[in-house]
Amino acid sequence: MLRRTVYLASCSIGARSVELDRAMAQMLAEMTVGAAWQAFESQVSEARDRFAALIGARPDQVAMVPNASVGAYQVASTRNWETRSRIVTTTAEFPSIAHVWLAQRSRGAEVVYAAPTPESYAALIDCTTRLVSVPLIGYQDAARLPVAEVVRTAHAAGAEVLVDAYQAVGVEPVDVGTLDCDFLVAGTSKYLLGLPGLAFLYTRSPERVDHAPRLTGWFGRVDPFAFDPRRLDFPASAARFETGTPAVPACYAANAGLRLIGKLDLATVHDHVRRLTEFAREQLAEQGEQVRAVAPMRRGAHIGLIDPDPSGLGHRLAERDIAVSPRGDVVRLSFHYYSDVDDVAALCAALRDARRTEPRASSHVVPSREAVPCPPLN
Image 1 (cartoon, helix red, strand yellow):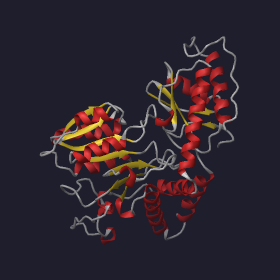
Image 2: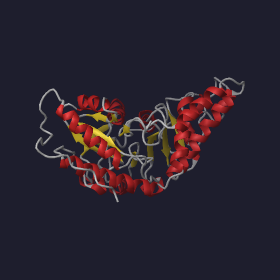
Image 3: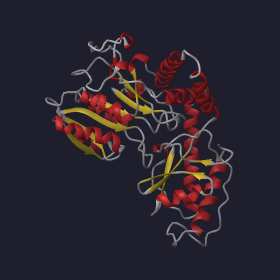
Image 4: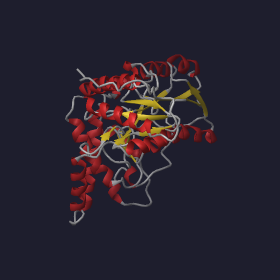
């Protein structure tokens, strides 16, 4: 795939790998034998173990969920909002997570929005706060949120904290012990190089709930293979938050991606990506493009290119074999360990060409400026 495409869309879905294709072929091959479900269950267990190891958790602290929104719902729906009613979220939250919090208002929750600063969070966290939600990296502009400060403030007030790490896992070290969070959600379809359909919910203390989950299924039982329709029991582990059969293809894909990521030193990956995003920002600015301002040390793995028609620009870049991810008022340009300075050079050239052929003149280009060559990244 990387021979055909300059792939800058991992913040949306990771690049397709040879290992992913092999995993899909393996699943299809195993469907031809009688013990296919035995193989499927092995993949589910392996994915849980690999993700737990990646974030420094125990497997019994990790639940398999179809997406991060269901993970957030399983947290919210097992909490009582009568005594402590406040949920503190942020304007930088991915809407799907924020919508889960808003849906709890019918159960008595009060949802308030902080700006993505420690001071704004602190001003809203008080003795009525039950849950604080904070993304590790913002989905739109890749700004790093002050998770450590927010966690300290929340815990001092007796509140629990959920961290959305979807835009971080796979391109930087993420450790739940270091974060000191109570919950963490993330999935496999972005920088973990898998497919949509599988996410994970980390819970520090799975048994600490106000009441049992209302959304459940046979994988949420003490013994899923008891097949007793009259008995509803919940294990002490995070599996209590699971529902029905997981998306099996996504589990195969998750293990392919997690094996790739597991071979890397994620601190090295983070440093590589940080330098590359800053290099790309400098080169884009040199040729007159507007990029969302985020300090290099507080930036995640992508940059936001401001454009009046992000979707249209995304299509024009795709015609030039540049894969990007439009969101809101920006075109997201994301980088992984497989990205390099040649990708930045190709992006710059494609943008110059796309600007020349736009239906109307763009305010993002300085026409008189000569093309700036992309020097090697040391």
